[in-house]
Structures are given as C-alpha cells and as structure tokens.
Amino acid sequence: MTKIKMCGLSRTEDIQAANAIKPDYIGFVFAEISKRRVSALEASKLKSKLDPEIKAVGVFLDDKLDFVASMLNLGIVDVVQLHGSEDEEYIEKVRKITNKPIIKAFIIRSQEDVERAEKSTADYILLDGGKGEGRAFDWSLLKAIKRPYFLAGGLNPDNVGDAVKALKPYAVDVSTGIETDGVKDREKMTAFAGAVREEG
View 1 (spheres, helix red, strand yellow):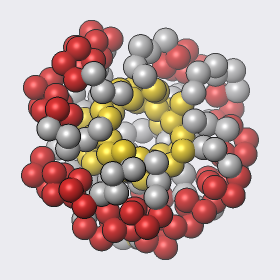
View 2 (cartoon, helix red, strand yellow):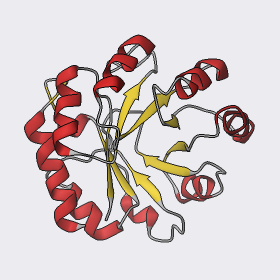
View 3 (cartoon, helix red, strand yellow):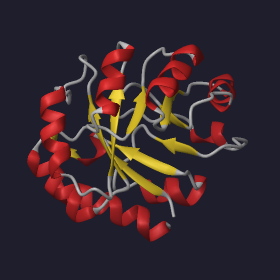
View 4 (tube, helix red, strand yellow):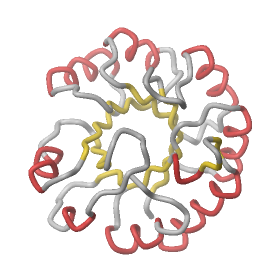
C-alpha cells in the first residue's frame, strides 16, 4: 500500500482533518521562504493534537543543525525532510545527533538527477518538480529507479490514482493539491487519500 504524506499543515483544523483521514505522515514546514511556514511553538501545539499513529515530518531548507536537532529531540517532529542543498556530510551529522529517519528531497529534471538521488545515504528520498510549488516533472524518468521513494510535485485528487497505479511509489506527498485558495481543504484531503487507497 502506497503511503500518504500531507504536507504544509498549519492550523488546528488541518490536524483535525488529518486525524480523521489518517495519512501515514503529515508535514510541518519550517522553511522561512514558505507561505506554509510554522514556528517551533506553533508546530509543538499542533503536534500535541496529532494522532500519535501519524508521523510528523519537519521540512527544513538549509537550516542550522542545532535547530533541526532540537525539533527532533523535543519530539515536535518524528522525521526530518531536507529540502535544500544539504550534502552527505550534513545528512551524516543529522543522523549522529538525532538517530531519527531522514528524507532527502531532490528536484528531478533529468536522468542524472534520478541517479544522484539514488546514491543518497538518507533513509528515504523524495522526488519533486520544485520546492513546494506543486510543479510536476516527467515521471518517465523514474522507470529505472531501484529504491523506494516519495513522489511529490503536482499531485492532486484527480491524478494521484494514476501516479500510484503507474509508478507504485513508496509514498505520495501532497500540499498545493489539497488546498483551496492557499488553505488546506478537508474535502480535497479526503478525496486524495481515497484515490491513493483505491489503487493501493
């Protein structure tokens, strides 16, 4: 069964919807450039309301190691997602100080990008068309990929079933595709999860 990650949750209503829908992961975005950014305090309050069976992922963009480590070690997030230019040395340092799962995001524009992603020492790789703009990429580039991955970029309730059927990714990741006017939409969240689960 393909796992579901709903990213960019920032309101109590988003958490309530997630608790009802039960995705495998939700994401808190800490990147300052994001309109979905939450502070550490906001994330902590939201996490306290989250069903403990749902893993909270912290999305970081070239952040200082001590901030990333504090979010993990305080239990505000369970998994770290690195969405910037973090290298293998950075990944190794995060692993040493937190011992929590690491997802490394890669923007895919060519076969070389896929090959680079496959070599990552992160626990999981996330393949995206951009940095949270909901931009799709050419899925045919993934035909030869050997390791499990999170598929992101341009997914929505209308196309995610096709993506799961064609690619069988480890997980699908959505943010923009479950929003209306920049705000998470419970109906779209429900429809997205239903489409993924229908295809398995």
